[in-house]
Length: 462
Image (cartoon, rainbow, N blue to C red; front, top):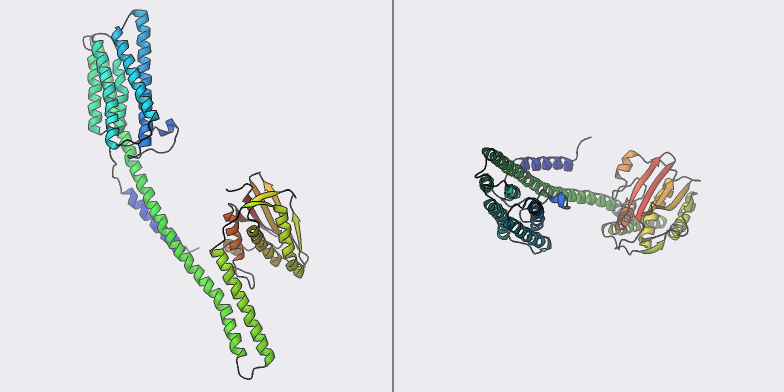
């Protein structure tokens, strides 16, 4: 099957968008990314430099982990003090001060809701890095020439620098961590220097590797953002083109539908106006003109209903009463064709909908079903509660199946296969049902059974 111009345009636009984004590798600023958002519970991407909330969650996580680290060191050193009378009491006081300061920081980040500027966020980051570095340096100096592991306090500053700062700043933080690590080995056995060297290598590799990974994610996120923006622009262009194409098709259909009755009216009036025309012929021509004028009026009325539907007035209504009313209105038309109408619905079944508009939608379906039937056939209207969340109404007739070509266009406005129809009945019905938060579908289309099914929410939309 040949593709429509709109489909070809869509393909061209989308290929262009993807090609444009594939070439765009601009990096964002150095202040970004909270890849740990899922850990905190949001689960959404926080790779937005100006997003204070993502920064706050990230800082809360870093400071909480740091509080856990300092608190664990305090507990271990307190136990060591009780058992071995080591380390010096001043170490416990410094660690206690660190726990207190970090607790205040965690509480502040947890409670603060007012956004921070980029400069203040940078200041908060530098404070976090300086706080841990100063604490680790002070504890290492206090316990110099004794076996200690306070260089572990530099783990989070290295990670935080890799997350938020430039490569140069990250390397500077790694150098500080390496310095404190070697300072802790000062005056000890040679093996301690080897251990310090190994830790320095770990800090270096960890800092640079995390920085590279984060910046790789930064570039990917920048491309994804550009991708999304470009696709959104493409979608808007396609929607605009599709709307114009739809308006064009609709205009042509309306013109065609209007032209026929107008031509009949003009021809009938011209015939009736001829000199010496027989009175009976003149009256027949007037009758044809009146009939076509009425058809034209109905077409314009239906089109206005389709194009500018009335707002729905939702209220509690009885479904069985609505179905019985529709059946009673349609029975005269059904009787003329020898078709029976049967209603099946629980008497107490109620829902929230605009009864008048839903009756109009159902009447369109029922009349279409009657027109499709032959003498002796029966149209069924069934209603039931569907899984407690929706009410389903089925209009069933035995005049199937509908051809595949017709099914493809059955809900399109001004499409009809019925003699004298205007093709707006099903389109209006679908608009009404969708305004109620539901939809109409062709549920069954097989020999001896055609079923149009309406589903509307069982509860009020308000």
